[in-house]
Image 1: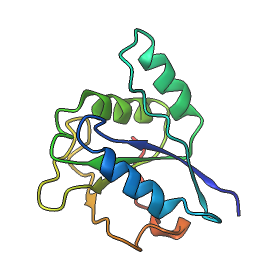
Image 2: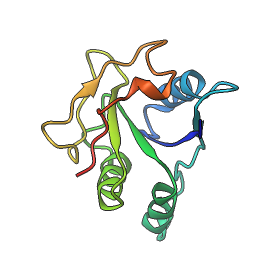
Image 3: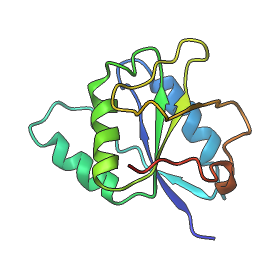
Image 4: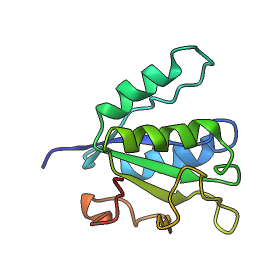
Length: 132
């Protein structure tokens, strides 16, 4: 089975720990998922061009919803870019009880429960990815 190429969208200022936990969980040796850390950490004039190129070359965007996801410019822009590129995205609850929906997400997008063991196979996301 081919690997699912994943782009992880997260608030670089607040949710690095969540991103690291997600990558460890879904991309261990022999996993069906391939995650590259393509986070754009530098402030650069061409960051949108870089984000477009990176998201165009993946199969799925996983969006970590933390306490500041609603106002995290990078998260909201990456959701919009995923939509423009017709790439599916999923919202994951990064901070249980404190997670906020990114403003770029649509009201019908559910924030999925994310806990150890429930994201480890390609069948973990049947019919849940959103493309708008």
